[in-house]
Length: 241
Image (cartoon, rainbow, N blue to C red; front, top):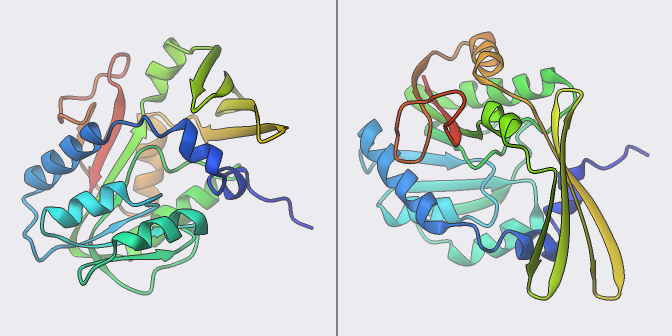
């Protein structure tokens, strides 16, 4: 039996949502306002948020007046997101490795939702699906952690208490991946999960984008759209066509 991918289990647990519930919606909203204004997207734009998690970016984009579709592999997240659906906001379970049925005016891949797979070809396939799923003048917005800064400032061990659960977090970079090992005791038992994303710096991402025919038009280093600086920027944000 094929072993499940780490994200299939972890993103579907209630504990994932507990650990990250402090995530800053303000940052997400600032970024969405800034990037849609920068790209000068007309309100007729149909945006695909992929993967969309519980839909916080998608809901906010929709509140700005855009037609939005959110897709995510985690059924649990999509179920929660569906409560926000309306005429111009829809959510569906979708695996990024599978081609889309529609074409979109813009595709947003936000909050380090990429680089999960051992094989580079799977990551490239995702980008190819996105390239094929964008209209002729459409945009792709890619928002990833800045691997170089993570490497320079790696916090090897950390403890976080959220909702009376003590999460023990260990981080390491090895074999081309950034690992985050999370262990905790909850609901009468011990749990352990590992998040794993590929170490993707600007050079590697540029090579991926080029392979599928994307042209990078802008590179930003944070949600205020400041210039990207490899050692200090919080994010690696690429805009491509």
